[in-house]
View 1 (cartoon, rainbow, N blue to C red):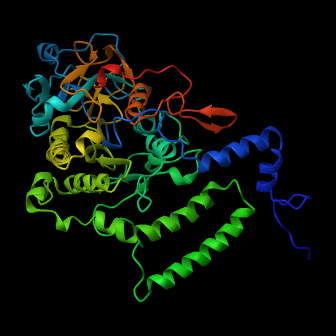
View 2 (cartoon, rainbow, N blue to C red):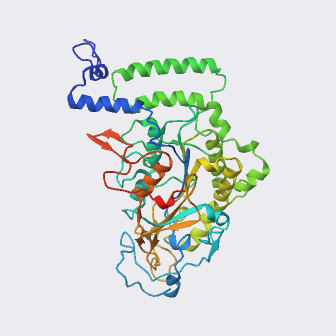
View 3 (cartoon, rainbow, N blue to C red):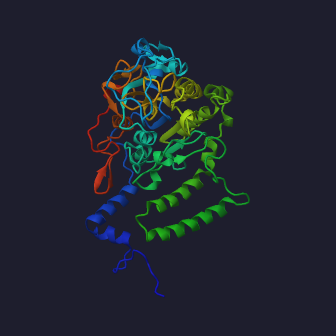
Length: 471
């Protein structure tokens, strides 16, 4: 039987060699651009305010009127039917009456920033926070909402923010991923890995899922009885076989990513294990994050590991609070009051601890923090005599803090009841443009060729950097 060699041209070149040599028309040029982009280290477009970004993702959608957007008028009309024109509710759920926040708001810091009693520890850092009260998105569903907050699109298959940063800026530490994700032990966000995917980019730019206890990755440790030299020889043989296979499949980014992941895993065996080992931290540091308190232990450990990852040069770190569905997340349909008490108590002390520790270690001035979820919640109750709140994507709150951010201020506003953004509305893509800017990237120039277009995180529409947020 004749031997079949895939993708070999009559001139004796492989498809990859052929396209590199003569371009191969428009299709070949597109592939050549793709291959070049997969290997490019673009670098910052201008001096960056921040070297690292931490996205504190409150999965499920925290309520703006119970956290960072006080509404006195909501208390005034509490219990009355809503008669306005704003669309409320989602998926045909019943709409109840207007419901005031049970949480007291107070002014904190020299700025007098208003924060609810849910966050007594974060409130101590009020002068560092820039609260955007006029966020809005395009969807009421969790899956598409998480996708949009992470990838800029409500549709699956697009690269995430962390992937864009990895593609644009590269890695600082070759022994660790540039993009790390830590989820909630109760489960991941709806959409799972699509939220930290590299989409149409090479798979090497996707997020690496870390565990916060034990080995950061399953099967990372060298098998018992295997020496480092034996493992290195085995890996070299495997890489050689994979590389030969890749030569006939030059456009297979998944295979290329697999080869690179084996190499990264080998280099990570020592450094990754060390970075999640918090046993050498002082008791005072463990207490700062609440690592030994059952209520704050998990998120506290993740926040502490985040500081250690930043010290090691990891570029983008995303932490999820809440996993699974409904009450295990910030998705307070049934009882938003108790739901938010629970999840705020789990995260308030660790986040405040991270802020304080970043300042102590000198990392604050090079680290950007982002706090928020996929959308907010309605100022109405969900159903009659039920203290839940439904999804609200027309107006919600997020905050930025750290490197390059002018803290102690609010930007924009929702209407008097908190339904929709009315002043200085900030779309999710405006937020993304601002984050990229703080990291030294121009969102209009950070592009990747796909399907004949120069794709961008912020899409083809016109989006603006939130200039007021910048220091």
